[in-house]
Length: 153
Image (cartoon, rainbow, N blue to C red; front, side, top):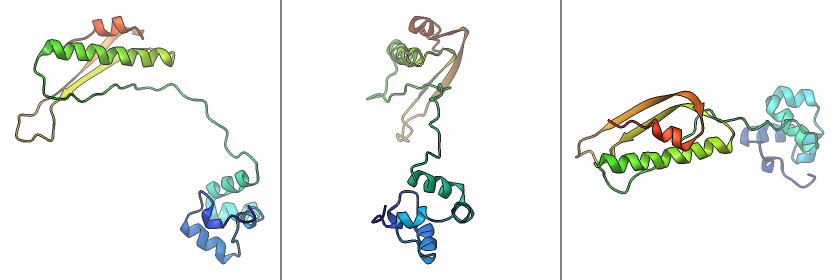
């Protein structure tokens, strides 16, 4: 830290570096020697956490990974398809992928949203957008149960 310029410390932006240099802080080591009160006042709590980290004191606890509330499997098709049977097969494949993601995080779902839309960049062609929410009467992460709830109008 003795040789690390203050502007090269991750988290110290141009404005803070300018302010610190005016105070005579040119190296990371100089920054760690500042009083906590000054750092908190001038660089906010984020600056104080940065100072603590440079001092070797963990300032933030790692958070537990939380279960996602939403899972998505989205794909673009190589061309426009109008065959509903083909689309149902693709939706079943995507549902299987989502169910696998649910199982991997040990969770379940009760609502599945399916949306299909045309290429919005092909403005010379008619546009289509449709989405449906399918409510499953019980929590599940089974591919078979999710696919069996599939509706396509």
